[in-house]
Image (tube, rainbow, N blue to C red; front, side, top):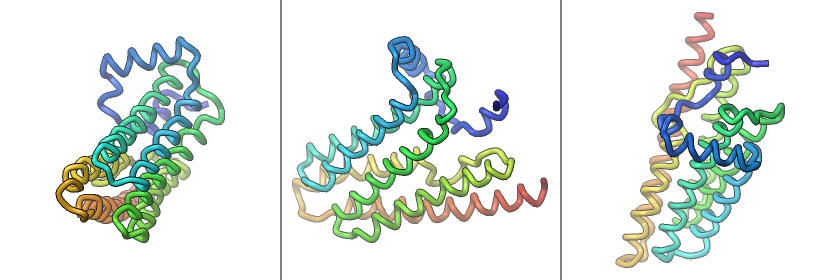
Length: 211
């Protein structure tokens, strides 16, 4: 069993976790029978809805709803851990639900954004690099180091860029048939994820050399 210190080392630092709203919501969910694994799976549902909205229509309202789906996915990512740890509902298979749905949700959003702007390869590249940032982080944990959540394009920042791109696209679509907002967002996510992979690998190598 992990100690509290070890749990903290493998937990993503999120400022909103200490907000009264998040604490109240997680407590209410835990009290009313919600499970952390179920909340993790719900994040994939929101990602699927958002991806479908991005792919199937370019309507401005659809872009706004997709942006909301991105944020709801992040809310699930916040609350699942709080229900598990603060709510006392951890399970032995929790780490699987903590990681796998995240990778699926990232891929659904990023691949959909790539195809929506006519550059499917860019969406797949973004998804691959996003998954690689997580792989490097988890690999560090597997060799006994604290998981490294650093980098210019960690998950919250990827989703922030995508949200901004979707909202910008909702403004661009009524005046133009172009998809520059989604293209720029996808390029930023791919490039930033590549930089994050490099910086995390360098930090990992230095930490292993010092250990």
